[in-house]
Length: 217
Image 1: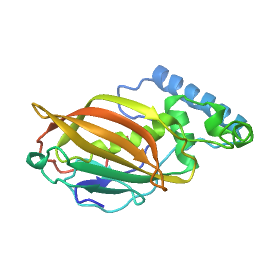
Image 2 (image 1 turned 180 degrees about the vertical axis):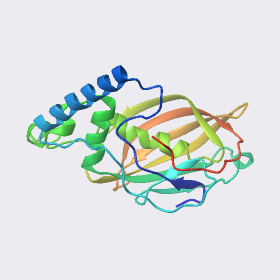
Image 3 (image 1 turned 135 degrees about the horizontal axis):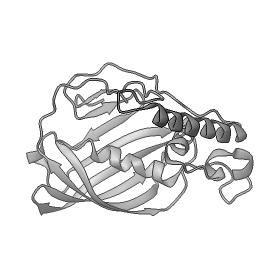
Image 4 (image 1 turned 90 degrees about the horizontal axis):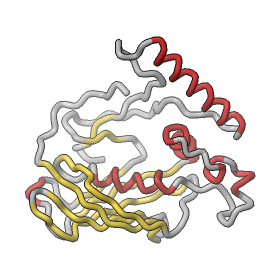
């Protein structure tokens, strides 16, 4: 794990604070209950919290989890150039599919119901394309400095199944000036096959990390 990553904390079900009135909270609760009913229909339990925690140095610009890994070729913004790269690796457990469905609203049975997905061309449940593509964003966030997404295009080449481990690799192919970079973005499966190809443009600000605390999400 990089020294530029800090601990990810629990994700609470309900926001807190005075901006949440009774009517708003009632609407949120109603939505959550409806989602619970939907997931129950699929025989699934909707995930609510992330309890995995690890100790990490304070001062990074990203958070970390025990089963994630990162590698990058540059440690400072002024070292970024054509050929600089960053890689981010994580597994995609079934619980990620269920959490993503709950968060995004994409409850396509292909991602959630094994008995349904078995009779499709994929022979089983597959991860949401946007979920897998999110590892590209995770990799870009681990560039030195503060990376801001400007654009991204994607091509989906092959499915990713629950339990697979993927690696997102982002490599600078062009410097555009003003802190902007064009990167080739690829997600590989465990066999080294490219399941997603694409290209991104990011703005990287040379911002020193501040002391980090576990976010109140």
